Amino acid sequence: MKASIRKTTRLLFIYLISILIAIATLFPIYWLFVVSARTKVEVFAGPKLIQTTFYAENYTRPFLHDIFGRYLLNSLIIGFRDQATFSFGRSPTAWHHRQYSSFLFFSFSPVWVSGIPGLA
Image (cartoon, rainbow, N blue to C red; front, side):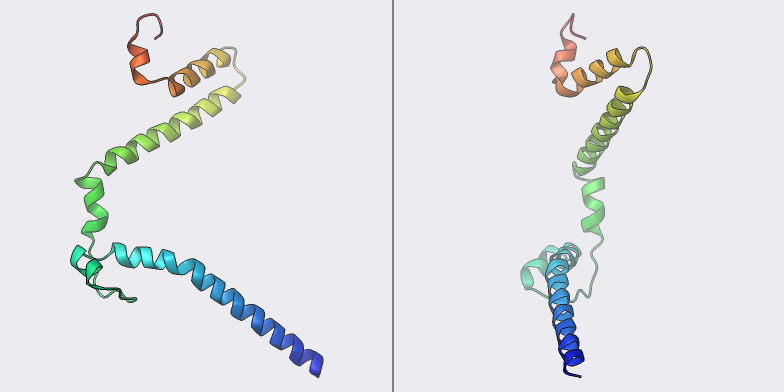
């Protein structure tokens, strides 16, 4: 009987510690979304754990009015270019070495280098 009580107490302690670690890990993510859905006035008014209003303009304004949309598009272009470079480097065609080296050259060289005659 004492062994089962000891085992139950040990499991309860492990679960309690696991729950506390999960809360400590997930709370900053929750706080990020709570604060991001507030207006500027609500953010500086003081901390509230429960959000009662939702300010959707904080999510739409960066894509529509600010330059963040351009940065996101640039990141997507770079990501697709890197995937293309990897796939062309692994393709077993006769010309894949030249194509792979040209992708690498234009990936690591600045834009102004392509304007120099003889390098482009």
